[in-house]
Length: 173
Image 1 (cartoon, one colour):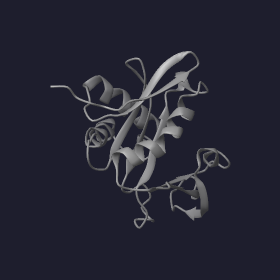
Image 2: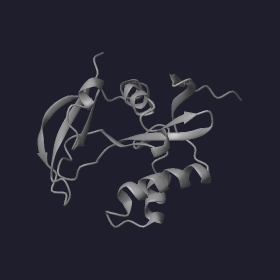
Image 3: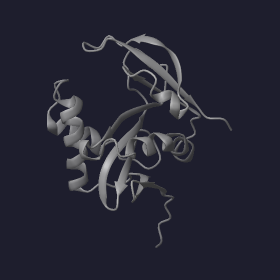
Image 4: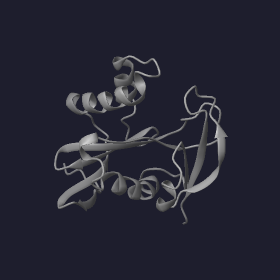
């Protein structure tokens, strides 16, 4: 049996890396991703490590949301992002969402995040039927260079950074 998988390859600072759908997960990969998200937001939001790990385990799908994508240098995971149906409680009418865009601190400022964000449109088109995607962030002037359009400021009602910026990525056919 030959499994065909389209892999998006990028050259980053002399290294060859790929961005691909994670549709199967090993315990080591699950642990790495869970550590990242637990340290980034899980602990602060009151989730246990086990809850974040379980969330990620159930985010590994092939044909439905949520979808988890990994950025790999050789076999080493260096970053991730997800497409989710819901990421902001107060806006259930908007979906899907780009969420959990994360690059391991050892690999930041090396082009991995840039390559991941450049791949979002292609992966959205390749793995879903959606032609638009949303995100919210505190950052200004960053996502625009990846074709995201600022929609408005939004009250997230979150305790930290309550007012954030809502962005939309629209794919043309």
